[in-house]
Each structure stands twice: as C-alpha cells, then as structure tokens.
Image (cartoon, rainbow, N blue to C red; front, side, top):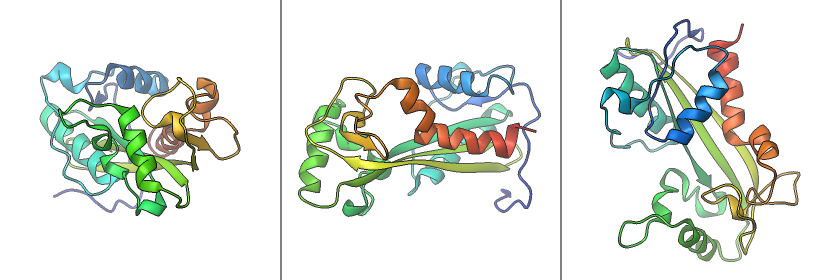
Length: 208
C-alpha cells in the first residue's frame, strides 16, 4: 500500500537517485541542481526502461506516476517531473497537454504551431498564464514526496526572442518586460517554475 499522507517529509539519505527521464538536458540540469546532495544520477534509460503512459489528470499525478514506475522497477529512489503552461481563461489549458498542443497532424512537434494555436484559442480573453513544474521523489517501498512550483505572468503576441524553448517566446513573467524567449537564461532560471519546485524539494527532502 502506498504511503499517501505522511506526517513528516522523508529525507533522502542515499547516494544514488534515478532520474525518470530520457531527456539528456533535463538529466544534466537535475544533476547540477541536486549535485551537492547526491552522488550518482543514472537515468531510466540506463536501466532499459521506457516512459510509462501518462494517465494522470494533474501535473503532480503524472510526475508521481513516472517516479513510482521507475522506483519500483529499479529498486532505487527515483525523481520525475511534469511541467507545462496553464491559462485560467482557457480553463487551465493547455496544462498537462502542453506538448500535445504543439503536435502537427503528422505527429511532429512544432511549438511555433503550438503558440499560434494557443493564441487563436485565447482570442481577446485575459492573457494571464503560469508555468507549472511538479516534482515527485519516490522510494521503492511506495513512499512519495511531491512539490509543485509556479511562475506567473501573461501571454503576449507575437512571440518574441529565440532563447528558451516551447512556449517561452510568448510568456512574459511578472515583474519583467521581456519574454522568456528574450530574457537572460540565468535570470529566467532563478525565478522559473522549475527553480521554485526544486527550492521546495531541497528544503523538504535534502537540506538540513
């Protein structure tokens, strides 16, 4: 039975943390962020694991699903993330389907197409939006710790800048006049949804 309501956060005290991802850039970034606390970061691919089907209805649910899948099959603690863009005026869309919104009819992913589609769906409604990053740290015994980080801002059109990726060129974070596609990467990363989530996870499971 999974432990779903712990009273005290569980601290990570091992030396190896499996990253439930095949994305080399993501694996490298997580290794850098958690390097002071963990010795080794093998990926799910190194264990011959494919990605599980993401059947959750929230970012947290999908991150937890991926982390549990890898932890159970490797018998090691595993970390997974799930992220995307949410627009309240569109009832939270594209949300957990952010990547799918950018899929062309032939299955290829094109975020220029995704941004055009999002802008057309928004029309003249409120452009407020936020990026979400959910992190799940699961142990082989079924225990799982989750956190969710957010970065609030608004959507602009046309897209601006060629830095970042995904929907970054049309997202302007609060307190800035530049989009994530224009802003200095170091500034973006310091205040991003991913940075917020990792600060919470480190405080909850690694620091102290």
